[in-house]
Each structure stands twice: as structure tokens, then as C-alpha cells.
Length: 314
Image 1 (tube, rainbow, N blue to C red):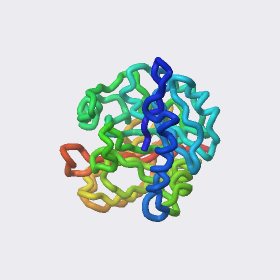
Image 2: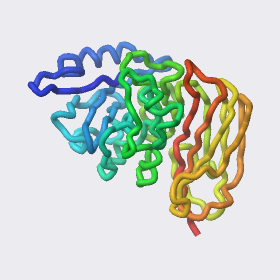
Image 3: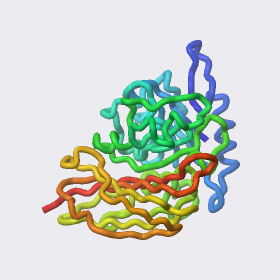
Image 4: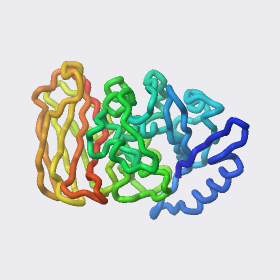
């Protein structure tokens, strides 16, 4: 659960104030069952521009509960222990004022929310079927031309993996059309799930439990590698419905932006493909997006891999 930590203008705390935080922690602990169901301690710090909203997650015992009316995002980062906490930016594609990319702490900000029930933050596209304009969120919202999207974050140099989330202010998490984060972890425990987030071994879906593995030169999603020739791309996907489209995108300075380098049409529930990027010329970022055939509750069903960063070496 990531309820808001807020302080009102008159000084009274609402949302997750200190008087609620103890109860909140007890509820989270009561529902945590290693091997069956993991409940992480967490809250949302909803900063205004230039920082944006961030969800704060803890590996074990929670750290300080800080309200955005009392601290800045860098001050919040300064209060957290690297390796024991994470902050993940939230619905940045609709943030009405620009978010300052220059403010970053790569030890604490490791992931990026590409989709939630609010809408899609992959790239600015108000016409996309998952855009904020089509989200059916509790409050109508629109895509922001200057909002921070995943593609803008990656192009600016931020090394962030992809997650999705089910937040829509209705307190109904885990719905099949509202966003899920997937992690590659050796066990279903708090520590293992948190460590997978920290290691950027993640991807996001619109809520369907699609299984996805994307690698470049055998480097898994969220990783960094080198290549002295054509990198080898490898995709394995298992859908919950027929997989209609898998697009692999690349960013490099010669490209001038993200371009689709493979447009694959599996038309199957299970799909595997491998091949080289023969046009590799410079340091590149690769990621893929997958689209299934059927809709869930009227919503398109998609998944987004985390990027893989490839440095060109001679």
C-alpha cells in the first residue's frame, strides 16, 4: 500500500500521519507471509514540480515517514539508506509542470512507472488507447507535453527499469487491467522482491500476468553490457492471450530518438525469437513492448520490458 504522506496548511497531518503510520505498519506486517504473499512497507510522497510524485518502498523495517510539504525530494533521499529503500516516480507523463531530470539519486531511484491505472507514461501520445485521456481514472487527466516519460528519462541518461502499478484511488489493487510490476527473484520474500527491484530485474504489464524475458548478448532486462559487433537480441514471451505484436526499440545518438528496429507478429500464445542488430553503430538502449489480441474490461493488454544498455567497444 502506498497511501499519501501529507501535511495540511494548518499543520495537521492527514493521510499517513504519525498517528496512522503505526497502524499502517502493523497491517502490512500482518499480511506479509513469506513464500505466499509479500507486503512491503511503503508510502507516497507527492511532491510538486520540479520533483513529481514518488512512491517510497522499504526492504524491511520502514524508514522515516516524511511529508512533501516539509522536505524536498533530495532531502527525502538524504534520509534514506541506499539498499534499504527505493523511490519510484509515479504517473510522470501527466504531471502538469516539467520534472527536473537533473535531480537524481541512482542509488535510491532505480525504477520507473511506465503505466498505472492513471495512464501510460511511455512516450507523449494522447491518442494512445492507454493514454491518460482514456484511463477511466477517478479524476479526469490528460497527457502533459512536457511530462517526464520513460523514453525521455532514458534518453536523458537515467538508468531506470520498468514497472507498472494498479493505483487508481479506488483501493482495488491487482485488477487485470490496472497495472502490475513483475520481478525476477529467487524467492517470494520481502528481501528478495526488494533486491530484484533494486537490481532492476523487472518489467511491467497492464495487469495481465504475461511472462516476459528479453536479453541482449544474454544480459537480462535492466542490465548493462558491451558489444564489439552486432548485439544479439533474444525474446521469450508467454501470453495470457494471443500475442499479436512484439516491437523492439532502440535509442542511440545516430538514431536521434527511439526507433522500432524489429516489428514482430507472433500471433501465438508462446513466442521466441532471436537475431542480431545489424545496424548497431553506437552506444544504444534497447527495450520492447508487447501487445496481446484481446482486451480486458475494454483496455488494451500490453507489457513493457526494462531497457538494456549496450556500450559499443572497439
